[in-house]
Image 1 (cartoon, rainbow, N blue to C red):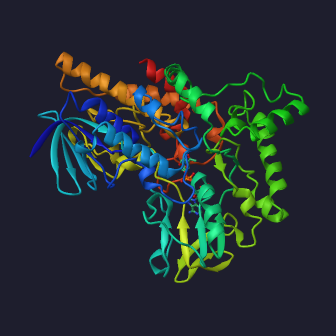
Image 2 (image 1 turned 180 degrees about the vertical axis):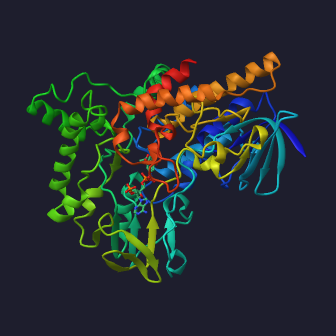
Length: 518
Ligand code: N01
């Protein structure tokens, strides 16, 4: 049996950085379930996959030569460029030797007598280690609702998060698409352009603003390269780990003319999410929020020619920003195509997959292929799918049976020496995940270094600390509109997931800086 100091789970962006930070001082192994690096940007290779934060920000800041040398071809990078970047980093910093690919961790058992974790994997590896860093991703365990009859469908079923590497040709096919979140909205316009017909099965309409993606502008890039050190610091010191100018004007204080002008500017800003920061109270006051929500509904009615389709596409049941704001490239425009049909599965839910397609309460749809973009078992899923047993053989699934509890999203009481990056109740995708991942890894490395320096063998948190963090997260959540929508932020999407504020990651963005201070 092998013994190392540290096991890292996952070779996504945080895992790669953890390897880089630690491998010279400690013996280390990283287990990765895919056969390449990049995590999210390795798996999510569906058509249209693209980040919605500017790549000059959404990139590593730990090495100035790297950020000076690298050039992003577009403002908001597409998946192939992000995967290429992850591979470049793995090669440049010689990280691959530490990674065992296609080798998912299957169990983590803590041995109290030795204070060691026993790590077992799908390929049969058994490694003992002193510390575990779970960089397994907040959005990495795909969610597929268990529809009846899925096995009977004769055509292929794709999940966007496990898209075939060789791509899919939908030419001449009738395609059914389930899921109208950030992923679906990116993928569908490209599939519609190729398929014979696209049926969009919508349960909840989405707010979506234009991405404003464009080829990289040399002056913009050079300006960032000239100011990287101070901008990276600004990112780390900022509330959401992304550079945003926070407005001071309340939507209620603005005159109707000011409101119209500010919202139109935000819509055309080519800055994703700008609508949520159009006024100071969009994310905290439902009545202020409604000005912005109504503005987006008016845009949808202006873009989509068929009034009935437009009305169905208008989100009305939750505030804008309550779920993640989607960023599109021609999503609403796509519904003006003759080969796209919107199907309302809120009023007439999907009942089953059939041999030849989908059955909803309103009737049968004949399809050649079905795509699901039904999201993730977010925040906890990547961990609860591993058999994790801590002190007294306590299983993580039992510990979290009433909802996830963590301290700072980093540690779980009863699971010593195990650290999570982007764990439940961290900001996760509410922040900019590469930069947030860097500071969480730095913080974790600081703890490990201090333990080694001081001769400590075991660190744990307490249930009292978890409860106080849960209270802080709940307090932040209660002040935002996130609580007024069902989404992966608060666990109210995955079947069987406890829907309470304790599993809420979105809310902890406000607490993120507090976490950085401790
Ligand atoms: O997943 P989602 P996603 N019947 O959970 C629907 C990040 N991301 O993969 O809203 C019918 O948002 C569900 O319907 P409803 C980003 O953080 C970033 O799209 O629950 N429909 C919803 O429409 C994002 O938030 C980028 O009623 C069902 C959809 O499936 C996160 O990943 C790009 C259903 C799931 O939406 C997740 O996004 C992509 C059912 N039984 C993703 N079950 C960028 O950077 C679920 N749905 C741009």
